[in-house]
Length: 386
Image (tube, rainbow, N blue to C red):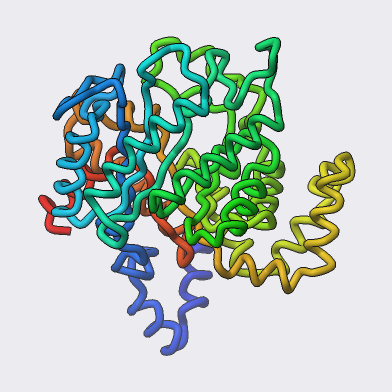
């Protein structure tokens, strides 16, 4: 048997050309010796939880989130100066806290807007890109987001829609660069886009288009299990539905699709393909699984019929859209636990692989990576001379 194998091998490489090719072949399958993506500080947006119950220059520990505290406005301003020194010029402000438990969402919004105005005043337009995540404006104890109805048993859609519009109006008025839509209420992007267009606002929309019911998104909450099933977000693994929501948000006028969590590399890649190739959009819409979902909903039928019949117009919209990512608190927690229990080097290596994969999937449409570990990671990059 061995003799026969040797004979076949010798016959395959008997002529000089084949021998030369064989002699020049390497034992490695690697084609490239350089990474096709490069991680730089400009890739990142640093979240900051701005707690309006804190005064002066204060920090307050956040449960299960080592190294990521709640910050007062003054403390946040000093922190942003440090971010800028390390090349990070984009922040996502998450206003939290209310001075009175009886405050309504509208009153909370007014309070948060005034607090964020101090951030904008400290860093005028052009010095930092200021994004606001209005998550805490109308977060309810049952995990839902929006204005409760009179019986406190569900949400009042019209009042919630009015609040979404007011969020866009008020944050635009103080010069916020970008507003996040949360991927919880039907028509969020449409309401926000219509509001901004009505006042000719340049503020951009970032949308959590595929927001899913992940149990790791709120690890900093002491009673997080109640936040797992809100009934407002897409079920884990429902990729087709998530891609439908992505196309809906592009149709309604978003500027940046934010894939949350960052581990959903397949959704980053799917989104970048939508932005690159209109045939990919057509194939997805006409796919049997997609069509089955669309056919059951009159609004979806209208939206996607318009997209297909006016595909060039829709694809033109796609050309102006970017894709970003969001690292949830559960991932941050795991990275910090590994840093403490294993080493900084190991935690950095794990984050580096995830970030490089996300960048590769998003290229060339990357906006920014929203990550609580941004500054730490950039410092690690500098230490390693990258």
